[in-house]
Length: 462
Image 1 (cartoon, rainbow, N blue to C red):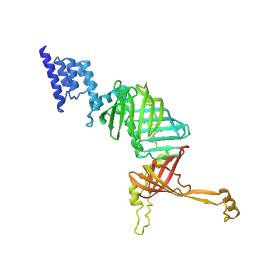
Image 2: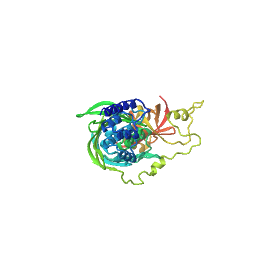
Image 3: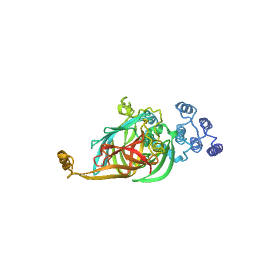
Image 4: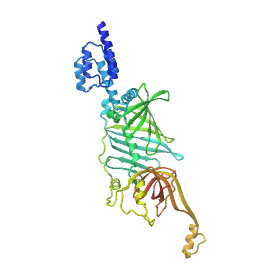
């Protein structure tokens, strides 16, 4: 009896020493030796929990351990430690508690086998959001094919239709009849969104790091706040520590710099996983509510969905240019396209260039507006007199300049819409395309939400 107690104390001491020495790890062979030496299960489990370990928990290895006399309780302890070790394998992970909570959150969504089997998802639902003085309802469909294909389409009660498609080879966003490449910051947000999906996380645990950042009260639950990092960005999860249920997520969008907070509720079991069928979304002070109608795992997807349509293929084909490569940013345009000769004449670049998606931050705008009263003008003869009397007083904008920041560069943009002029665009962040010495800015008209594009020439810096 004394011998067994001494052996138990030796095991605990050995486990402590192993935990302090990164070069000594508990392996399958060690556990087998302990089990065959008559050490009790509780003592072996304590050693497993306290020591640094590196277990092979493949199906064949588990069978060998079972044949060697290792009990189910010890095997379960080894499996639990092996999974947490996988989560914490990144050198950035220093928080064991966070790794355990992340593993618990994934287990609350689905078994490791179920999550590992997911290679595509399709989600359909409805989002209700305020628009102007009313409310707009959006019917949407979202398809993700791991790890790099994304499709989303929406149809609003206001008649607006939008879609986004992303593949490794090409991408586009389509609003009504206007098509354009997806801006780089939006692409990064989409890619981080894919990497935030529980099934994707479970399949690539070694690529993630996790840090606990205290607690946050959500309703009656003191949730654990986890900051999760992966290549390309980071996000936060608020987990119910008792159940592992995900209650809230936070992500900062690179395209707009705004934080998006999503509260999850109405969890249901669908296709082998628990899914939140209701989501309350707050972004930049604006709230929206999404209700999931259906959730499919590994759905049959039409092969033509991710084929490049004519407009996407046309806009993503690189134009040949022997004189100079396409400018990479606004700074290059300012340096090369708008450089001046000794006589101050502007060098015009006649070499075609490739469009580059950019984020345009409008800081200020300056319009030159003039009025003209033609009601008494008879210089155009009889016909001119009639026309002038009908058109009467007219107010029009002769010039429009906006002060913008693009890729960190301050630039002046002059309106280049020869026929219609540029509609006034207020301060804010907009998607656009850099095309040679031109920038196209996409935006929606307020109230009507009509999609428009303004064409500007880069005129200088400020």
